[in-house]
Image (tube, rainbow, N blue to C red):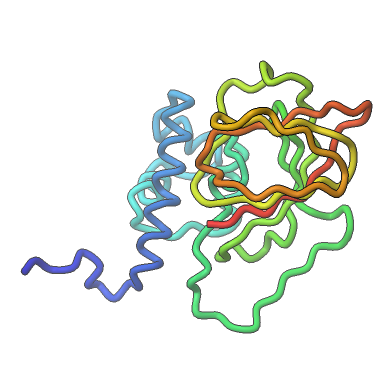
Length: 200
């Protein structure tokens, strides 16, 4: 019987989490057509450090994760959602109104909530839907896990690859497989706002 590659004492969930994080970063870097050196320069970290992160040889700090997110234009769930198997009990995180971390994309404006804890099973954030037509998306949004969505204000259409477009208004909610390609466009005069909770 072969040796377990995780026999160095690293808990299996930490290994799996780091590997998933490394894969996400590598995929985003390659999608941009960047070398390790180019991506490292954009994020303000060394080439060797980035290589170790991609190959799960080191666990990056929250600050480095944040810089990689910005440099690689990664959607929050791709990078910030990590396994909650940390062994810590009684954890707490707080975000005062309007003080979440802002992440802008061409179609959405995200405000990450309770983002100081990076090792958790869910990622809550408020999103402003800036897109007005599905043609504004270069490709479907998709990532591992499931998502809960609650419309806070305005009206929108939830578009996905397996279902008919779904009109939604304030107070409506939706739970779906986020591996299914999807996207939202605002249909009200003002940009719709939603609360999203991404679950791994």
